[in-house]
Image (cartoon, rainbow, N blue to C red):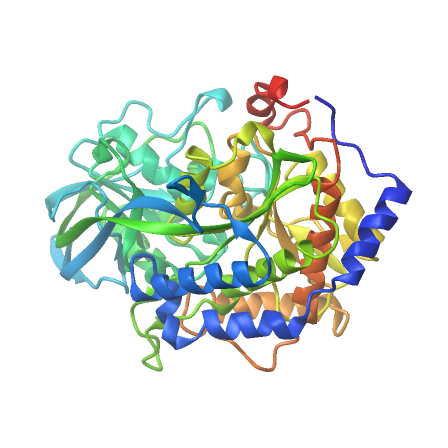
Length: 549
């Protein structure tokens, strides 16, 4: 196996020329977004009529731009889709939450003070009565860092309160990567740890900076329908109670128990922390659950390689959003997901159109529109666990998620630090187009773990999720930062993420062209991208080196 090297100047000129001859059309991208983000598609929720419309539209567009079916084998022929079996959980009726503290009992409202996720343990009813509450700091067990927030505490029959992010988020220095979030900081890890610790559940304490989003995002994401992969023993992966709680309510609980939240939070940043019981505080939770098994769809198109069809480059983007959920202040209940992620799917379709024109690539190029990203990267997780094309000979994964419609940018980025030669090549490709690379401006948000490329990366495939730039041609960094801040606060995972005819989609088209250029280089190369020394994914990739020539 060869390490990935930068393409020579002459080769680059050929690839750049091909991309320039097939510029992505902002008007075509706009047309796709308008359809996919329309109210008729009902927010593109998995296992809904919106999914049926979405899968049909993407399949039709893949065919129209010249792709071939690349999904499941049926009767000896590839279909346009890959079946993704999932478990679906929905809260039925009211969620009753009562807190007893300081001798008084109060009710918390689902979606306001607390956001309880529908239980994923397979039960049809959850009832917890007077469960003791324990603060467990950041809820981390990391032997390689000599870190244990639990220190032998028995959490059976108890609810734990846990901080979001990891211990050195605020200070910027420590054993968990400094400001950049490790996987220990993700709420998904904390729920996994709840099951391992035998707790009735974990409630993550919401803080906007540490979570990287406001309460509206928490409420809308966690009170909606929940999905998971089909598990033989779901109780081993999920505690009965998973949810979030507002910061002010948490501080009041601590005060009633004679504790100071800020003092214990500061202690939780150290190895000396030990779990603290909130004396006199208990929680009771009761609600019904509708649990079903459904089959969702990944949509898969392919440009078969002309010379080495068994070597595969994958472009990916998720088609789903949150569907129909709680209304916003205007009464709108449809979570259209125009930026997140209709524009990614639109761009991927147009990259497919460009790659089917002229000379076919040497390697095969797969276009993978995945389901249930918003439910925990489930569509990409299923594909990576059940690959249609071997991962050992998958060259790389280029993911696109929520590209910015704020106009052309001088720079571009990626989600987190990929620590790979694939990232180096992305940077070189952008430089050749006159654009500079800006590292993830918010590594503390844990973006590397929040997009579909992570499903590939953790299995060793060099993977990257492209990020639009913030240094806008019109308005510079101030305008780009203002757009990003407003989107996160006012539209991310909210009904307001709708198509806007005033968008300047030239920037999205240019982002697509950069990814197209990178894909052409990879698809016409004999080299293989690689993880760099020190990457946690390198050993997994190296184990399959003999399968790449």
